[in-house]
Image (cartoon, rainbow, N blue to C red):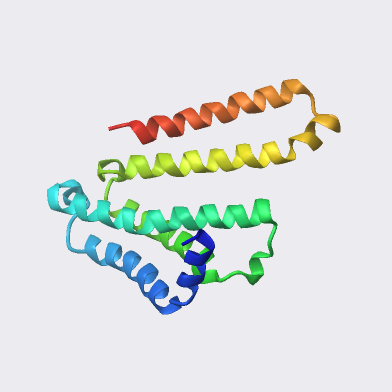
Length: 169
């Protein structure tokens, strides 16, 4: 099964996508109402929040990568894609993390640093790949090698920060 086949399969189950990406933020909101902010970092609650982070961030990150790839490399019209596959997971991830941030300290949620590091690394990789695709225009039409080197050092610093968050225990 290719990624394109997977996308076609998910497009056939729009109702399940809607339910999943509406239920997860709703569960975060309701679960936050049954405990105080300080109790959210205690043993049973922080693992529930960790499960909810992974339940929304893994599809959200996948959808972000898919959307960026479609926009930057394929240059497809985003008005013609299925919004439930391309945009709903990203929106659900953002809403879930914003709700969760109000209810619990995200640094105390197991695995959140790794997911956040993964998001940073993917963003940097997409920036680097996009720049590499368009670098020939940058170098031949007035961009100096110094600016390209400074940009490379900056991107490397961001990548290392993301890697450090990903590897942090």
